[in-house]
Length: 265
Image (cartoon, rainbow, N blue to C red):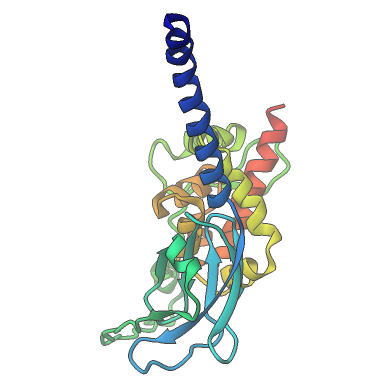
């Protein structure tokens, strides 16, 4: 009798461990099941369907757009995050839950943004007709530009004329990947996302129309200031950073990282 009790007390914890592991495996398998989410996007004010709304799965880095009826389909799994973007409307970020996948006829509503237009006064250049005077009044690009002997390039913009600008330009030229590694090295998934973003036509089409960096920030999990600092460390000027669309920013970051990663090998 004592022998049977000893065997029972020895095997019972192992049995519980096996059952617990099996349950966890089943749960994780359920959470990673990819399903096709079918839903609709509506205008919150008018309750009318919205066409051409960009719908992104930030987790899987894939995107789609709504049709004329506001409907869309996109692959999702539990714990993914959806991001809705449309010009003139407040962006919407929604976590994918089991309840969301369980019910049909889901709808998401976007809220129009209210813009307060301020008076803009346009002041053209006041030309006097005297070359010496007019030349002094022409606005000058504040970015300092440096040429480096032996480097086949017209020059590199350092962003300012302060004392550390030249050293920053040289540092960006010869070792710009350090800053990128500090940001991406701890999370290589972000670099994989960069590659996926460049391969998804829907995301590229969206980025080509945007200038606010909002989608890039959401997809990469970075702050806007980090994106700008990456570009400055890769010798891109403030003018490029300010005027480029999000797709150009994406290509610049990707190209810079790949180029200098090869140089470091």
